[in-house]
Length: 203
Image (cartoon, rainbow, N blue to C red; front, top):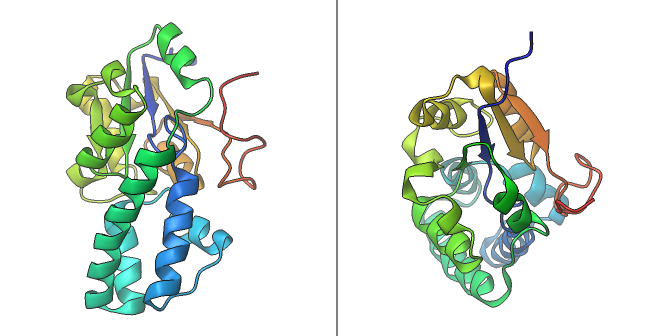
């Protein structure tokens, strides 16, 4: 017997806000500047869909702690500027949120202050608010470990088997499955090999 869905867990970047392309561009620029030349495909494979902590560890192991610290600082500056200039909601997501009748929350590898900014900038933040937004900074292990999704389900008072996760990266799908949850892949510009369409909720 299939357990009815009681909670929809949304990722943030690439699912609610069309920010992954911005992140990829910034990673490539900083890699060229700080000694780790990266292609778009390499950035997607190594960084997109993983937690900030995991990405920082990778960068530190490659360029050293001082350049990694500079990378992290510069990423925050460049990403925020690009978000302010060009970030939009994923096509169709506002209509989805307007008509969704199931309880929902956000669980993302991003930090709370970043999500407040991106979700606020695109008008999505009021659909959730602090009580229904969860960050990988709250758990021991980021994706593809299941910790974040299990944490979100526990805080929302829902059994993992009654949750469905909407993700755009393979790491998020792996984490959802490891948590015993169903997963729905949302098409994205940065994961064309995983899902068949650009990020959109329109048919």
